[in-house]
Length: 310
Image (cartoon, rainbow, N blue to C red; front, side, top):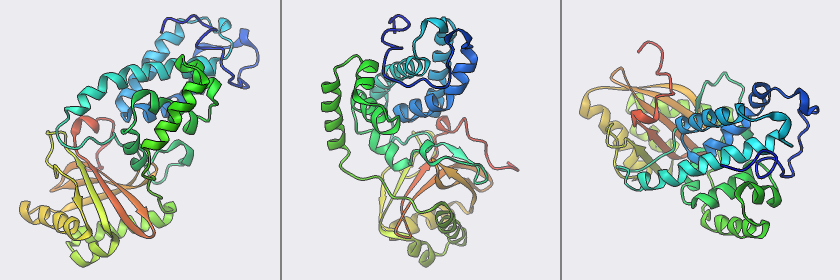
């Protein structure tokens, strides 16, 4: 992170159309205009809402100490800065995640169904989980190319590699992402299916739950050794339905579901016996639920507001 302004941070081929007069650029105005894009970049690289915010805070502190007039292209400068800061954290996090208790899932991005959500700003949970297969440099090249729509010359300048090396990294990344991400249904259809699933789960209606799940549906839970959830994946509609019903019967407490968007798709804030127990996200394809993700680790939910009334 020692590159001088206007060199590695600022001289990629970004088209800077938002700020025409360099002398009039205000650091806060520039950063605020780029913040949404930079946060999306950091989240795609890290899979953590909290760490993404930390990266943006670090980036702002560094950016506020820079003379904007010395920067050729603020968007390129800030993209490079956030990418490198996120990569430093990602490399450090890989060892921690390898030692993680149980299955590691990304932190969920939760929003109200009433909020206007740009599809391009949302990353399905399935894709976030696939990105975990990639080495840090592979993840960076893939995200910068596919999500940020940068060309290889721009990516090369950000990462300090040649354009051809970045192309090779991208080919390897695509090879590792052999499994396609789940195709979510249209939001309205996904919401209806999710609501039906919630109702069936509260009723403990085995047949109805099974009818809403694909035959090879997969349940993935992340308690981090702190919260109770299934430690291993649960496969198949029958086993998932029995698990959902069994948890409620065993503890004598019912689930309650508050519909929300999770990473742009259907999901819930869930309570169990009146206690906030986590965020559930659903992948939907061909009119059935194909995957259920339960993020219960409280360290991953600090940014989530529990359902009202708790």
